[in-house]
Image 1: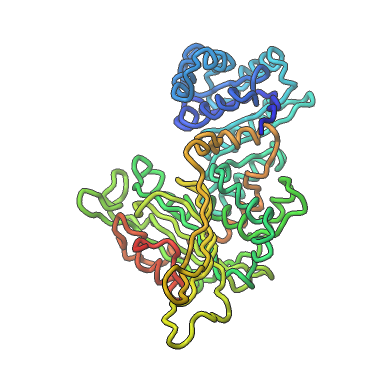
Image 2: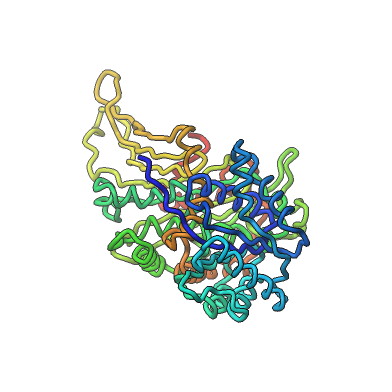
Length: 495
């Protein structure tokens, strides 16, 4: 079904315009929006950084970054003509005058109606500075257009630093003007969680502790820290992956059905779910969360031998945990999560394990039948996109024996290629003013409060690192975490 796109009018002021994120993700995403007509004649981008380059050089950078996206050179040239560069030091208040003048000039030239998006693609310590100066130096639109602030993760390193940062942003922008990007929320199958749940009676009617035994979320990476060692050693898997990506996925799985499918209602239900998440005491945190750090094998370095990593580092490269919700829908049903580096493969998946029938009528003395398997709904998020539902069926052998059968749908390569990439979706949502797929402050605060307690416990304990080998699915303790509950991971290497 082809729907004519709505053109979004806006000036985008990009701080950190010559950085890696801008050239790898943001400019290609904007080109896709331009190609589809979501932005066209009435948009302009002001790129800023400390580099001393002119518009022409900046446009060359933009064109080079999108060269692989299309062979239509005229379209690329037309697209790049909307980009302008202002050399800018975000800490120097006097520099904002040039930015203000350029914004006014382009607003008039492209008839933008005063609509402005300020995208900070810089280190988090600059977020508050930029937000404050945008307001005090009068760069915010005052003629009826919108003002929206976009920031990347990490949003703080604990609750206190996140709150301080949020207070700084809130002094200049309202909460509904702040868009905290988590690129996982732009992924096709993450957004499909809501469609699966609320668009299918067969699942929503069973989506509770009476029918679901447990839910598992796995975000696995097969690479090490690579060139991110300096950042990663000050963060670790708990802060880098659990506090944001995993907690957002879990909130979508655990939330109640919203009154309507709009950002305010969806966010409200996600917050309610996260507030019912049990914050562990010391004993519970020690029991319900495990951590790991990869060792070395063959030519593969162990984490402590990576460039930029201290030889005695206790930073975790793997986390597995058990989450419990104290509410009517989920009481007694655990959510198991795990994420790590140098694991067996790179993939993200959700496994919803349903309870087995109370009575297995096919398992009787002398029948020789194997016990029934649990029904499992798997949501494949990446690299494959799709679903599978494991059901029990009779096999074709003599007698009556059951076997698990997979009902599966995976998107083909053509459809996957046509699917908008996360940043394309999210930038479009910013231009629309749709906050559905962005983390609100109450969500971020709840996630930090939970994660901080795990971090506090780990900081007073000495881990036995390294404790897993590359190519595995993490330390043995991650399997033991489920085994204590007489459960196991759906995805296992021996399957």
